[in-house]
Image 1 (cartoon, rainbow, N blue to C red):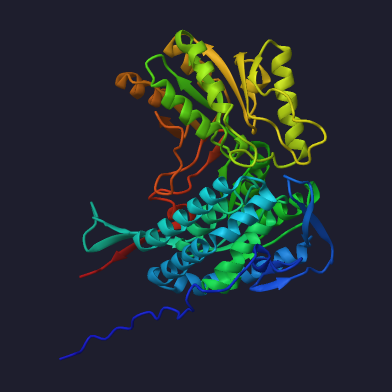
Image 2: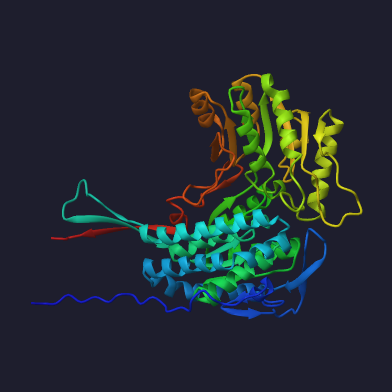
Length: 507
């Protein structure tokens, strides 16, 4: 008799979650980036500043890395990826779940850090951390569920057709400033769970949260530091172009993940295509929020405030064009204005990210007013002597779809209200944009809900809900709002190749 023997994978023995960090600065080594498991200053010895958008004060500086360091990060990631991919799904899931546990344990410090460099209020910062943790927990479980299949042969006997999934390899990622933590875990968590390694370029405005995330993943959660590299390159177009060219052309990088503007996304997509690299792109939006006359108006107002004014209106899926049926227009504007009047700086609303963002929002509002829009609250910047890039929560009535605030993504706490008469007109206005990320509609008419939800040209649709993003559902847009999906049951396969094996002569 032959005895069957097998070896169980040994999970790492890690210390309890009791590290005594007293400040977020303990999580971010001073003026260093993270490459190949090492905290480095970079060969140029140059740095760029990071500012607090609430006070305009300098927080710290981070290294302005050169192409030498970026290339080193790619090589390190490629070396570590082979070992990581060879581990069992359970081993990878253990590390990713541990990362989630560490983030949860350090929520107070991370919330303070996000508030400091991004400006969002504490409740929004903690909400982002909860979302980041939920994504990692989802991916840790999905790591165990990348099932293959066996396809029956339909014509040739004595063979089996096997399909399985394998990680693509090194994934380069560029993340935005508006969700400096959750955008990282939503992308990198899936790639790592799939068996890939990551080279991450965070936004110039918010690199500290990315560095803290890497610090906790490697120092506290036991992740191989070469798997999650964080490169901080010179702020501005030159640094972005340098790192973008390397990410799109380096032979060891097999996929690009990007969240940001459609303009930049198109450039990356074109460059990646020249080298046959896959790309997952989450780009701009111009979300319609449609309120029909049968809607529960108080609920629609509450959900609009939650969608439009979260993170001071600086989210890619926030309501951008509010379409309200003519018969309830005045009542809705009154209810919304009353609700918005309760939003306070420092409690519900933070600043915009920088002066450029503040000027853009101001100009959009000024343009709308010059064309006939009427502010019922807000509508002009706060006093000039106040520090920080604050714009008051604003409601504009008498807006039209042709105004700039109806055509462009506002990315600020301004709600333009547009009137419509019929369902067909509402859908025509909603879809009259090159973007198609999110859309929302409110109605008590079930048949209407089905029609409009199916008629909206958007990757995400909220029916009687202004909050739709969740890790167990796919996130992504149509038209010029992106390619691919993050989250959901197929999130890991975005970072995996499909391999077909034909096995003949099995008898």
